[in-house]
Amino acid sequence: MTYGMIATWRMAYEGVIHQSEHLADGSSAGDVLEGVIKEVEEFANFISVGYGGLPNEDGTVQLDAAFMDGTTFETGAVAGLENIKNPISVARKLSKERFNSFLIAEGAKKFAVKNGFEQEDLLTEKSKEKWEEKKKKIELKEMTPYDGHDTIGMVVLDKANHMAAGTSSSGLFMKKNGRVGDSPLPGSGFYVDSDIGGAAATGLGEDLMKGMLSYETVRKMEEGLSPEDAAQRTLEEFEKKLERKYGKVGAMSLVCMNNKGEWGIATNVEFTFVIATKTQKPTIYISNRSEDGQLIIEKPTKEWMKDYQGNLNNRIE
Ligand code: GLY
Image (cartoon, rainbow, N blue to C red; front, side, top):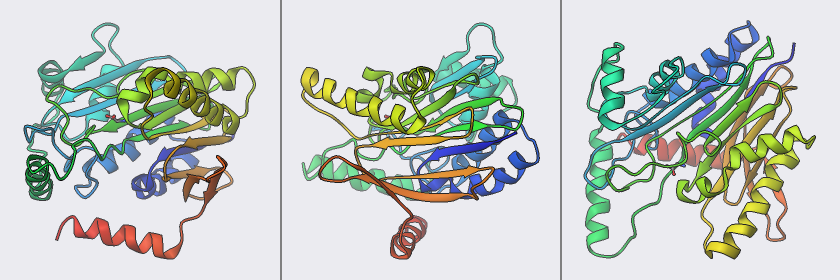
């Protein structure tokens, strides 16, 4: 009766702390996953997910999210959803639909409203200011658009051996109206099979979706690779292929967990993630790749944590 969860980025930490108690008490993987992601979506200072997410080039917040149940394969997703704070809950609701389980834009909003989700303005004053600043800089050619795409992606294993995976993201800052990233795409942004394990991705969606990295990571675990090897080989093999075929490789990170609660990650940038298992209390790690290509995973320093908190607080000053 082991259990555990792994989530992308430091922003998941508080949600993981709160939900790890429920996971230990026997809550389902789906409920725990939705609980963590909702908490991230609702915190305005996290500017790449949900409420307060950075807008597209027109100044509109458009959200992508997905939910997958690794036991039943029920999968739901939304893309370009506007004015709904918890796209993960809409995606989970959609996962119960036999047909029409992946909805976009107005159609996704219509489904959400019909199912009792409230409509609200998701653009905070701070995100609007950042949008205005960035627009000016782009006009002055001091900056290119398209940085900032920290998706919350996670995998949960519960005590009953059921697994769930999910994602939520406001996508690339200054994206074109209607642009969809990897996050809501099964196999690309997330994938889970309770008989094996699950994976989720974060990074540049346009590159991630070329490699179906979440599915590939799970497939490698099915072949017998440890989560650690599965994630790292998936990313390394794909980076080489992408470099050869496309000539450009964006930021990409993966988290995964198998159905024994063992976990792994891979990244080609500085990347934080959060783990909680039966034997490990919620822990933040910071990872990076050394110059000779080795994956380094360590606990963040006190200074790093202080800077992080400072940046977070600045967002609401
Ligand atoms: N990985 C999130 C996105 O590219 O939209």
